Image (tube, rainbow, N blue to C red; front, side, top):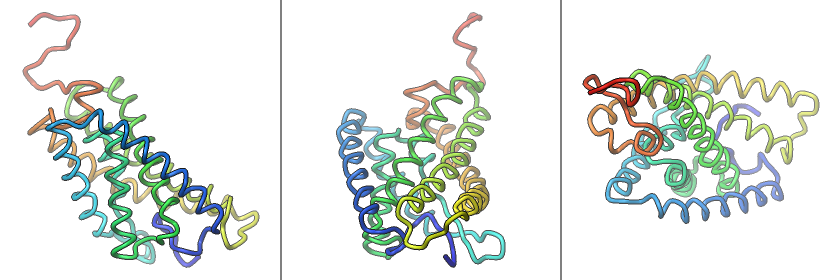
Length: 239
């Protein structure tokens, strides 16, 4: 493999495995549609459109890794999870991947199920679980929100990259044999750097939105409100 990328091209994974993950992605997205409709309101609906457009635009901007033979871009799972929640967030990322594959040829059409599973399903799910955990541990401040977004973005990218390793182990068209561990290590190393870039972009974007309109940040509404400078803790003090 001349390069490793999250957008899997046609022919890298065999047909049966690609079809199985395609069916899995279809069922999961149907569930996201069902659950996402319960979350949609006059704030979340337009925000979902903005998030999808932002992810699409930023994914077109690549930054080089190492010598420039490999490049990385925002996957968007953590950003979508924080701003619009796990169900609508997965749909936003999936729509971006479908458009990129059908119109720009970024990722094979036959591999859409694999790419959606890694970036839209695994990436968003891992990010939201981490956000839900960290927002209950870290202080309810802008700094706490920034750290939460950064960590969720980095780890979601790493886990999503290992989703590709699992898929390649199940149905890779080239036998890597005992070097599968090396493939996993290479994917993790490169996507750690990609994750750091994604974490910085995600944290900056989320904090910017939270400072202006915290009511538009899904994670703050559903998990834990942000504490501003003129607020006291909810317990242990008097206003």
